[in-house]
Each structure stands twice: as structure tokens, then as C-alpha cells.
Length: 142
Image 1 (cartoon, rainbow, N blue to C red):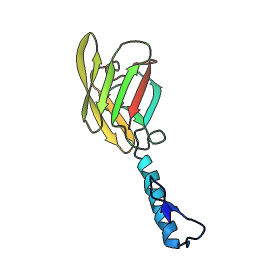
Image 2 (tube, helix red, strand yellow):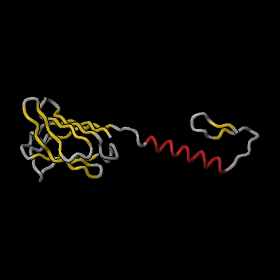
Image 3 (spheres, rainbow, N blue to C red):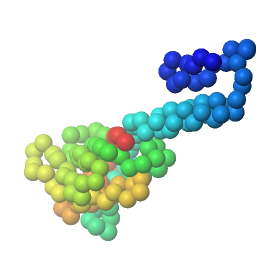
Image 4 (cartoon, rainbow, N blue to C red):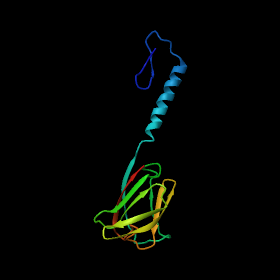
């Protein structure tokens, strides 16, 4: 019996005996290859509208259960229509900063739980990226 060049799957000739073990071996190889694809890099994009609230009682939350199926490894949030405050966060960090080109960065507390990311700041809704009515866009890489 010959095999395929990439995954070494069985290729029977008309005279080869067909064995259950060959099928099981092929299925295991196919299963492993499909599983490896599930670990590929995924990207999610979206938006939210600010509520004007800030602080520990009013965190911003993004849930990536339906888009990434896991927490993002990198998250960038920025307003849709201006160069106002923006944020870059890396998975697992407990503190991120919001930036604006004309001011110092403001600290925000980050929480990564399950497939969600939460953050809050104590300075203002602007620096928490939650200005009332402002649309924010995000890109998450997982």
C-alpha cells in the first residue's frame, strides 16, 4: 500500500487488503491536523459605544467567546472619529495605559477572565475609553 505525501494517509491499490487499523490510523492523523488548525491566529474586530461612566464599579467589558473562543493575546481600542485616548493591552497584564498625543498616559486596571477582558480607570470616562456616546473600535488578536 502507498501513502499520501503530506500526511501519510493510506492509498489502497485494488489488490491491497483493507484493514480497520489503517482507517483508525488515518482518522487519528486527520483529527490531529484539524485540531492544529484550531490553534491558528484569529482576529476579531468590533465596536462599542461609551456610557460616560468610569471607575471600578463601571468597567468596560469585551467578551470574545463568540469571535475568538478565547481571550485575545493583544487588544487595541481606539475612538472611531478622533485621535483621542487609545489603549494597547497584552494578555495577562494587570495594568494598561490609555494614551493621547497631548498628555501623559493614564493607568487602567485590567482583568482577564475566561474569554473576557475588563478594564477601568479612575481619572475620567475619557481616559477609560468610555466617553458618553463616543464610538470605540477594537481589534483583538488571539
